[in-house]
Image (cartoon, rainbow, N blue to C red; front, side, top):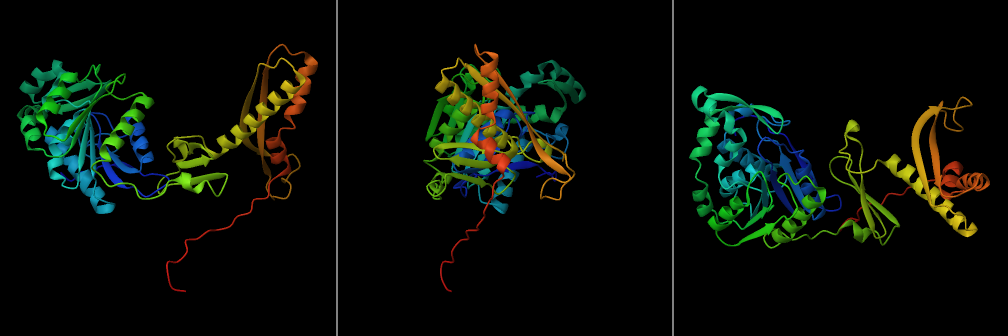
Length: 403
């Protein structure tokens, strides 16, 4: 709202149109790419939400000077993110705030009428709580007007305006005025923001309100499993207040093909369903991906490695040989073709997979040599050597009417 450009990332479900949109506000001096924020956001997308997480002014990739921000401007940034989502996609129905982002969300929610549910995670009960992070510099801030502080190993410049604004903020009044359904989530052993903050927020808010203890989590939700758990609980709670999902998931497509993949509207993340099994593929960050899963070539190598190990296991079991384990290391590269042009491709380079096999067990030299011969007979190995004919057909949506 001060003219600076905010940068965010919109995560969308890979298998459907979002049934509702959410905005995620991160903690003080953190950023949209904080591991806990990323894990929680992606877990919510698997439940059908589209989630926008963004960097506050002066942090991460957003423009502006962090030194010029205040607690009130943080709330303004949340409102701006919600307005962007409303303008470009759809109005957000869920607002999530982590740590001071949760406190700011409590302050901002009354200005976003589309929000039907609000969740806070490890949120302080008042904005002034964050001053303990730079308590050694309070006197400098008050007397000199600004100070260089170090928070979580990073240096920031703060100005007296931030301190004055935090002290002037009346969160009790904000809670009294709020009528949005509230979920308070807090780790009982949070060493950064104590549990009493959750108690104060919960007592100050109107019903409907709920509390969930994130037992075992830390303040930053740094454990992927804890972030995923929080997202699942959050999604289940929010389902009482936001639009229900109406579009089918990718599981519905598996009945027609053995393996189904779906790439979303943004980025390279791709959901994969193989029968009852599901996982994601992606590209490394170096080529524009988010490294959310193995790359397509990683999956190709994994297929060969798994098939090699299974083939060796099957043969050793049949022979009753003492094979304890087979570890397969694989790498893929492009090399110069031995005979000039790779056969039939007109390309002077060809693909090469290097496979290194480690066999563990009381095997003699003859058994080891024979098992390495058997590895060459792995079905996937043979398929790759023979080459594969891939046929492609296009399935287009049928018109709803007319000719």
